[in-house]
Image (tube, rainbow, N blue to C red; front, top):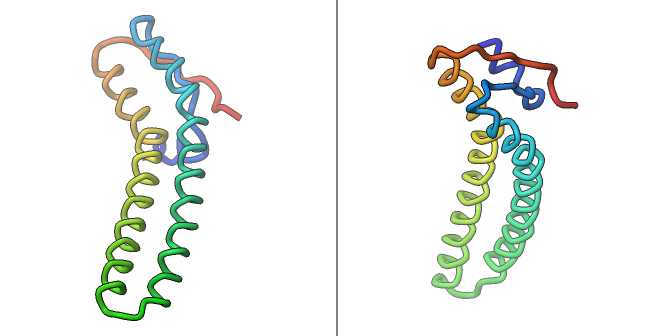
Length: 115
């Protein structure tokens, strides 16, 4: 539990054994990239949700309201799933890999968090 809480502040630059060293390079690239993708997707989703909300308010007949409502719900779900996947890959996947590597019988060394 403490390992999870410590990772919430930023991905720990974990040094895995030699045969897992490629994961360190992968996470060093993925960590900032996925947060940038999350920011762009969230901003685009927010703008699109506002546009759909305006369309919902301006709709004159019930079918247009229903269509705008469906699109608004879909947009909210898509943004939420995107955020959850980014958090999973940045915060929880390193924990899962740490446990996998530590149970495979090889030593692991955790260094200072990335700042």
